[in-house]
Amino acid sequence: MTSERRFRPGMGLTIATLVALAILIGLGSWQIGRIPEKRALLNRIHVGLTTDPMPLPVHVDDPTMLDWRRVSLEGIVADADPLPVFATNQTGKGGYHLYLPVKTRFGMAVMVNFGWVPMDQMDVPLPRGQEVALSGVFRVSAVPGFMSPENEPEKRVFYTADVHEMAAVFGLRTKEYYHFRVIADPWQDAPLPEAGQARVDIPNNHFEYAMTWFGLALTLVGVYVAYGVRRARKS
Image (cartoon, rainbow, N blue to C red; front, side, top):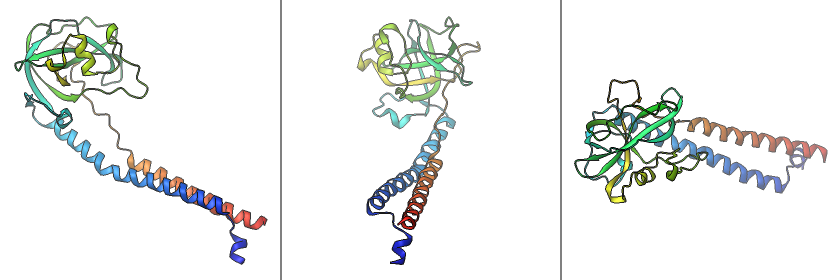
């Protein structure tokens, strides 16, 4: 009887606390489990970016297998106006990434990011209609973020480098282009466009997130115990 007087949280609160505690511990454990996966991804990206470029394969069935891999390619750049995609450069300044399709010797076109320009300097030299040999970073088609505005292909307004929508602007059919893009390495001496815009912005904060969930779990236990003791004293 003495122990009951010292601690009486109530059955309802006990059940709710156990459920919430299980959820918080589960979330923390899930974040801990993500750490090796994220480290492996970052290591794969590092290896891909520091390895010599490999020739662009003729067939790429699964673009994710080559994501962040350095590649080389040859082809003829489309003689068309570049497609600007809203983006920042390596220092965070707003502007556009300029995309043009390059038709490879295999007959397939690949969307190439030729570099970044400020918003007021769109008229820059590009190798339109010329044969080029480039190296760059293989990237999958971009996916819009949660807060990203929708692209407006009919107006040539792009916020996300969606390969399929960009290809459609250039009149390419599904079987005429690769379903990935290449971020070109520096290819000219002129200051603009600023090529080499591939950058890794993938945080590895899973440990911090895990500690947050576990901390909330401990806080919940503390509140539960304090309430149970206080309730017992009042009764």
